[in-house]
Image (cartoon, rainbow, N blue to C red):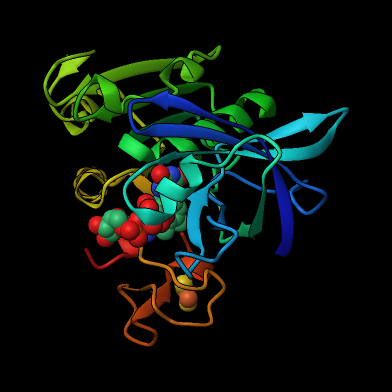
Length: 265
Ligand SMILES: Cc1cc2nc3c(=O)[nH]c(=O)nc-3n(C[C@H](O)[C@H](O)[C@H](O)COP(=O)(O)OP(=O)(O)OC[C@H]3O[C@@H](n4cnc5c(N)ncnc54)[C@H](O)[C@@H]3O)c2cc1C
Ligand code: FES
C-alpha cells in the first residue's frame, strides 16, 4: 500500500451519471489484483474531508510495466461530484492498492461472474485477468444487470473470447427483463458451476449468496461498507461473519472480497 499523487489522464462520461477516470501512477500497482481498491481524496481542498473508496476497473500497462490505473464511478454525492469535475492533468492524492482480491483456483472449470450496477469494475478487471491466464476456467458466463439500460456500463468489454455475456435490466430497456438473479438461476439449472464471483448492490449479493448456498456452490462477493480510513485504523467498516471466536471482520483489510457463505447476511 502506497500513498501517492496521481495525475488524471482522462475523466470521461461512460453513461448518464457514470465516469471513467484514468490515473497515472509512479509505482505500487504492478501486482494489483481484481477486487482491490483505492482511497481517493476527491478534492484538493480536502472537502469532503475523508477519502472515498473505488475498486480498480483495470491497469494501464506500457511495455509490461503498470503506469496507471482506471476506475469507474457513479456520481452519488459530494465526493463523486468533485471527482467528476477533475480534468486531465489535475492531481489527486491516492492510497492503494488496498484490500484483498477474488481468488479463482486453478481447478475451477466453470465460472460465473455477476455484476450489478456499479459493481462492474472488479468483475471487468477479473474477466480481463482470467483472459490473460489462459486455459482455465474453460467456460465463463458473465451476468450483468442494471435498473435500466443507463445503468449498464462497460458491458461491451465483457465481449471476450470464451466469455458468454447475459444482460438484464429491471425495466427491460436492454437485454432480458427482470433481475439478474433470475438469469443466474436459469444458468445454474442448465449445468454445473464451480464458483460464482459477484459484485453489486447488497440486496443482489445477498440473493446471489442464497442461490449459491442452496446449490452448494462456492461464492465470493465483493461488498461495500462506509469507509473512513481504508487501512484498518478507524474500525468503521465492520461486518458480521459466522465465526464465534472473531464475529467481525473489516471490509477494508479483511475484504472487500469475502466467502459469501461466511458472511452473516
Ligand atoms: C471497497 C469499495 C469499492 C467501491 N468501488 C466503487 C466503484 O468502483 N465505483 C463507484 O461508483 N463506487 C464505488 N464504491 C462506492 C463509493 O465509494 C461511494 O459511492 C462514494 O464514496 C460516495 O461518495 P460521495 O461523497 O459522492 O457520496 P456521499 O455524499 O458520501 O454519499 C452519497 C450517498 O451514497 C451512499 N454511500 C456513500 N459511500 C458509500 C459506500 N461506501 N457504500 C454504500 N453507499 C455509500 C451514502 O449513504 C449516501 O446515500 C465503493 C465502495 C467501497 C467500500
Ligand atoms: S475503513 Fe477504517 S477500519 Fe475499515
